Length: 454
Ligand code: AMP
Ligand code: ZN
Image (cartoon, rainbow, N blue to C red; front, side, top):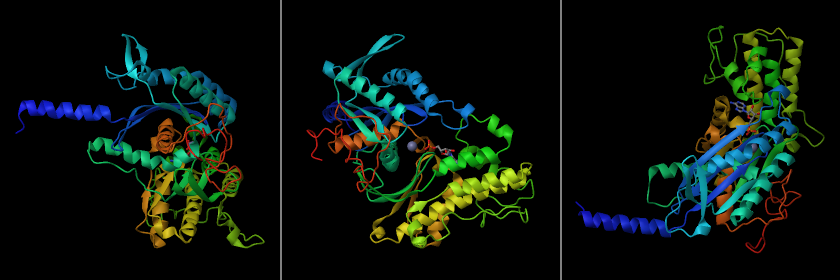
């Protein structure tokens, strides 16, 4: 057994060691769409991460049945400052020996506390809705100037793509290991980004190098699901919805009451979707199946969802009194068609040269919380000889828009040496692929070239 004095020495050594090792601390702001989110994230020297604060407020767009840019903008303006104010209370307590320039006094009902000042502010610079982005970027600049610390304007889609790396760092913390963690998945990996605004299959080779292998030609999958839900879901479900993200309600409706209406299949059953309803009055056409002048090949790098959405709307318009059992079948068909379409592009991509190196497919964005999507992707991979590919679905709270993922990409960019210049502006459009017209993440202006050779 270790004697008491040796224990004391051990703890003093340990705390000195801890103090000498510098952890990175950032406060992050996300305002690119209808969610106002703030996070405080710390990355420790061993690679683990701690999320000290994470909160978001979604603007109420229900009367518009979809995100209205003005409503979203006003909500960012109303709630961002108080969210940041609340976040400051969760900053780690400052050590007594910390220099005043590394501390910030945060008021509370008992007076206040001296906290550790973040090392830098991270903010979503784009892509997204311009007004919301400007609210976030200007607030970030204001905080950074007042605190005399740098700020980093990061790409929202890159943040979605590397979210699982943050999740691995957060999980590592709970293990309290003294080993060093390399965040996973390691580059390269494939990501399907499936949200209300985007549908992309991305080959992530590095922090700033994401090649887009397939992108939507028309609307995003989440947008199609929301629009179809408005038609398929019974009116009372829409009226009582808590937000305009109707996807979870459609999923719940589609797979509820199975069995009670003589529908014996479940989401996990072998064929999953065959129904006891014989000969429904409708059949869906699969997307992008009619060869164009250059044949089917031109579509390999493309998704299309608007056709599936308009077919669903047409079927409902033709039969507005459609019974529940048939509506449920229709809801499942919409999802099946869209999810199999996603999966087909993954399989095509995996046939490309060099893809043997890919061990992981990440599926993120709001739609990734759909359990049926998980089944379709896994099943398609398995039946096409990719049983060994790892599928990663980040937890739902990190799949939808959130400031934690913005903080994490900020920390990875910071560690790689990138800094943003004060003159950087919000970017409504900002590609993540260096081959894009704007040059991708590093192609746009606003990077502080004194800090990093770009
Ligand atoms: P995001 O744009 O990443 O915030 O995600 C929001 C989008 O994801 C909306 O279009 C939602 O309807 C959709 N979504 C969220 N959960 C689900 C789900 N369980 N099934 C289908 N779509 C979903
Ligand atoms: Zn997003």
